[in-house]
Image (cartoon, rainbow over all chains, first blue to last red; front, top):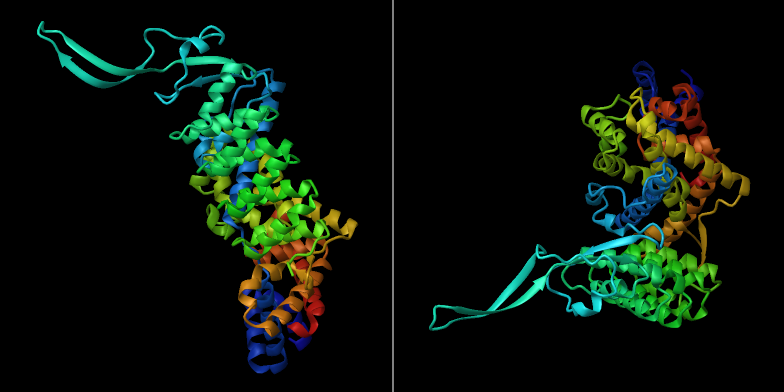
Length: 315
Length: 203
């Protein structure tokens, strides 16, 4: 084979895509031809240069994509169900939850009309029952409700009887519409539940729809700034999106951008801050470009600053 | 690598993957979850490297797995699942690349206080910062690579990406793109030649 013919085969030779026989011919030629060996060297340099360009997938970005996919699948399936005339109930059974690392909890109610049934967990709410019972529809409270008791004292008396003092917590199930005041108050309490992350995710998710109310807005801000669980914080952030123009909300967003340890959340905060074209956020974004430990977040900030016609650095 | 994801690429479906697919086809979401997990990282990497945009890569990821979800019942086991999935993914990516060609706005260069910087440099900044000369060289090289890649046709770009970065064999690439191994070979050859010409003194 001539040098010209070998030259055309070198890329395929490099990628190991030649038939064995042709490969051998190329190797024989290379052993005796300096020019073609240099050609192979140039192919090697090209490959090495290209290798340096490769971007790898950031785990936070992957998690973010999985979360978005879950939401899309949810909507997709809800639409299918609606087309099929089935109830628009929560779907995608619990089996999916492990995959999305607990993100299944992000599921949203289909429309504001969704009825919710909240099973309340043990004794952490002090909600006086007279306030609930008369106004909440479909209150279910029967003698068979589970009772959780903490015994405080046991005092036997002389007649062979015993006096026992205990705190009683009864699990009850209430159901009502989202716009019901009592349901809303229970959800606000549940959003602060210290012990159960699932309850907080679910509650914050449901409260999102009512972010127009000051009380709910404050609960969402509190969850975004202080909840230890990133899932809850993301849910709260979703709920605050319609309020991105609110000064108090923006202040919290800026603080979250600088302090939250979850890059996926920080990326979403940037989106939200940039939507409003607020020049007072330039300093915050510049600071993030300088200090954030995540290259995707820094890149996003740079892009945002560029779109705002602001400089990347501070001088 | 994509090959590690769920059995050998290009082969027919392994028993484990077949069981997952059949379960997912019956509506088992847990099985669907496992399928997504096995492949989604390589899908995202492909989209990210081809499109050089987080937003576009995210769109491709969503669209691809939604299509998989909607069409999994049509999968007939006459090719590997990887090939079937990649047909979907590459179609979506090729559409994106073609739209960009029309808009002629494929640019990975972003403006910074120091002038234009290539996105790939941004990702390499930590290692390059120690040596300004090397950093400058890398930056220039990064530019030229992006320009050279931008001069490829969408199909050449795809073949090159799948062979060089994803490590797929040309026979498999042909199968994914609905063309012959020979045509894929020609694409790879043309792509390499264009890259070499575009990079000139750098390689």
